[in-house]
Amino acid sequence: MKKRSNTPGQRAGRPAFAATALFLATAAPVQAQTIIGFEGMPTGQLMVDQTETEQGYAFTNVWGDQFDIIDENISNQLLAIGQYGAVAQGDVLVVRREDGRPFWFDRFDLRSASSYHSDSIDMVGYIADTLIFALAEVNTNTSAWLTRPSGFGAPISELHLVGATAGQMALYLDNFVFRATAGGGTITDGGARVHFSDFGVVGYAEGGFNVRLEFPAGLNHGYEVGWFLRTGPDPAQVRQPIPDSATYESDTATFTWSGDGIGGLTAQLVVVIEDTSPAQVGSSGASRWTLTLGNPDAEPRTVNLFAYTDIDADASTDNTAVLAQANERIQVTGPAHSIIDIHGIGADRYQVEAHPGLLSLLATDFLTLQNTGLPMTGDYTGALQWQDRSVPAKGTLTFEWTISATTADILFINGFEG
Image 1 (cartoon, rainbow, N blue to C red):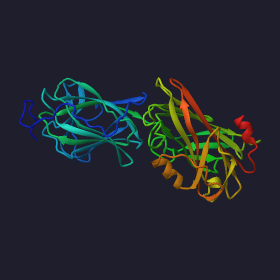
Image 2: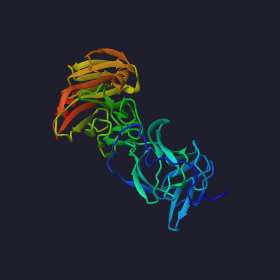
Image 3: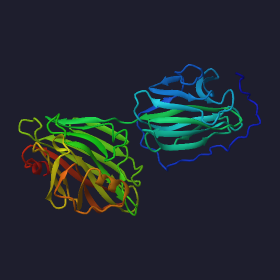
Image 4: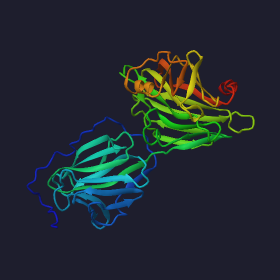
């Protein structure tokens, strides 16, 4: 195949940095980074279906013959697009983590092979086959290296480099900066255990976190627990985003959010589990969920916070639920008589519906909970609302709820909350 000329050709170029983002986003807090410099890959053309890996990331040529790893000046390898001919629309190179986990894409370096417009590509991010972000018409007309932020404000599971428009020269790419997302994890105390699956931590769960609430370990009373937030005049509440960080240490899990997707506020959720059974066998226990919102603005922010719970007491969807304390405390009883107590400390409103009715309302509509739905039997889902609360300027506001379990009564809960 003929090597592409370094002299200008007749193919029309595009303005440098013609870009379109499908979502406005800001960068997430810096975590451990992986820089892909292509030094660990063999040089040469990436053939269709060929995969090369570096530091846990796999680059696969799905379609096209214009993806090459080249050695620039015998000192720096890079990814060349259109080195030997024009890139074609629909050429696709896909980047994934070898372990299949989602990842953050922060930035990359680019330049033209010469001082003429390079070929253009679209950078498209997906998670679970859903398009999340797109950076369109990535190109440049300078031969000097430039660093460009991706603008991707959420994790992705695949990054697609898609041929868009032919320019006059090859597009050179280098130093892709990726960050792994935190995974699921488990916290324990005695014989009680809470497990957070990957859904909600590295991928989306409809209700926030997909969780196992095990009192005792092995007997799961949970399905999903999470929070929804509405800020100021927003037309609807939003589900908690994927957290920027997640840590699990002994009896405590901590999750943080930088502000992307929650109106510019920051958030930290701390979950603590306690085994309250006399013999520490987990037959009774409690989990405390403490969410702190931070307001970086110079003016107060009004928020509505919803704590959502999908409880399957005794690992069953055949539950009975009653209001234990207006309007902030609900008890769910399973067929084996385990009692799950959900207490939103100081909550103003509640609503209970059989799955998935309430979740559909939270996910789509401006919602004020109606203090309805109890008593009920069936597949329990419920939410507690703190209504029109003010987050102080340059300050924080904290919300707390507990989810507790016992096989007989809930007398221990008062001690845990005191």
